[in-house]
Length: 401
Image (cartoon, rainbow, N blue to C red):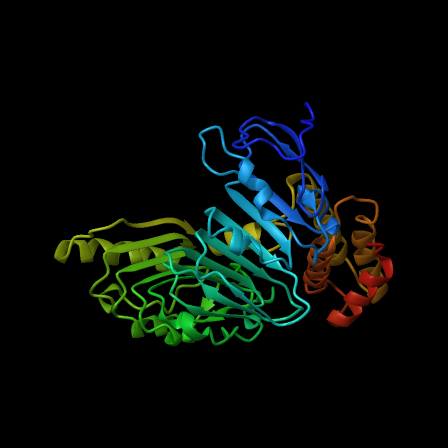
């Protein structure tokens, strides 16, 4: 690809190629635009290949360098931006240059207030880690979608309500842990459209949190929840969506929501799913569905374990295959274990398998630690439990990642 030698690219660059840009200083970075790619990720060097352009977490960024770029059709490029760092200057930039989708993982050393009230953002996703300062956001005055994930206790917002709100709190991976309680979401309680996302087999989120949101007419749930009976308090719902839910036993009957126009149940447990199908048909006889109504992909209990029971679901296919093979071997060894020494040997062999593999970063290490805990809880012939502390100790002693 040719390197274009001008200090700043000409207006409306639409061709693929390599371009020097003044992102954090004169010609500090080279931007590579590839055919058909409409996204760009910017972040610290430890993100490796997950970031297209590496910048220090506290670097000041000149976001206007992207004004020169457009898609072949002429709309602003990049269409989708991912940024990990502390510079909220993209919100000022977005006052004159609309951003279609912005994902921001703020790295904040102190509590920070940012003003997006005048920004043009169609979708804003904020990913909050477990450490750092709190983020207080003044919301855009124009309609937009807001998605907040991670440590929700570090987030607050004021101003005009988003057209839809998605919350994906960081929950534990243990479905037997006490139910997760959503923190107080402050002014966001006024939203009318809410999506709550969780993992299907993780710690359940209690639906008593919905009492914070009295104005809801649209609710979408993904994953594992408890206190489903509390949905009966929200008789005003016109849209209800249930996805990847392994337990719907306490879901109230359809006549709880007399205004319901649209209903989706997708990848849900089989027993309640069959009941929902029948209720849906019965309801249609007295009041036809105005919007989409369907119950599909009913799942037996073993499906959830196969699809979501192990922590490798988000891994690249090649790595996930290796991890699952190693897990199978360890599980088979543990099933024959008659002493703690046998168990330690099985878990150590599993752990060591990943010492020479590339791509084992913090997230993968946490996944492997979770896999070791799961293995320690599997069937064996030892006659006493393998404690979590013991399994963790074996894991830490053998790993080099």
